[in-house]
Image (cartoon, rainbow, N blue to C red):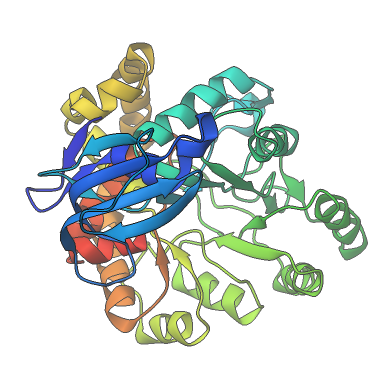
Length: 392
């Protein structure tokens, strides 16, 4: 088990969180007792000190003092440690389904590397993450991984996914896995084929501006988008939307989208957006790490040497991030751009939280330690540590 400190405020024992919230029963049904731990249950209630937690099978059976446990139960001494629920990563992209640079569609290839994906899923468990939502991926790949997880064929966080992103030709995130909207008849047929595979939530892209050195992108016709969202809503399928600008965010909320994959991040959000998000109860994935990590990488990559990163991520991948990926962000313009917009995103997330919006921790990254960086950035935005855990 490893610990991560958020600026000296909160200590998380990720292994304990993982064991309690999701996973003990995945490998064995033995009872488990965590004794004398400081417990934060994520509901908003104050922390409870020196409590025992009994897990029977895959259920939290009892919380209290001096719990009598079966003689066969495994006992963990929680003295001086903190116990929290398993974390939820609401916006990630599991490696193993696609290869190539996401910003260069001609480079993208669909693959089916399930062992690679499983390695990352184990990393999420190690980081205390017990549920993930894959925001867009190779449809066949992520549904196969979801099926394996749900059938108990692999040890993994709970997997939710929606398959390839829905966009337009020349639009944001176009690639071999994308569902491209051209006409309503074609879009409806393609969506029906996806609905038949029981997606948990389908992601759309509505963004007319490129990122970094990318060109201006094709605009999504809102009448076509509205028909697609209405069709999903009628079939009981939720939607989440990649947006960057407030104009697009308000438009997709008005069209009936049920979640946002990002906060507004290209400018300071106006009151109208905050009000709409709160009143419509739109869950928003925080994704501060999407901006913050890239901005940090252009200045200093030493955080990749932190204990959590080196414990989870392969040395070759860490070296790739420090060298080739960093160079791509610097020369392609994404690094400087993210350094400019990251403060806007942080301020907008803080305002949304203060207004009572529904926030869900998400990173838009593929590395499990990014979840802990997201918690750090939420705290830096001014959100209390306990509220950070609740968001997660």
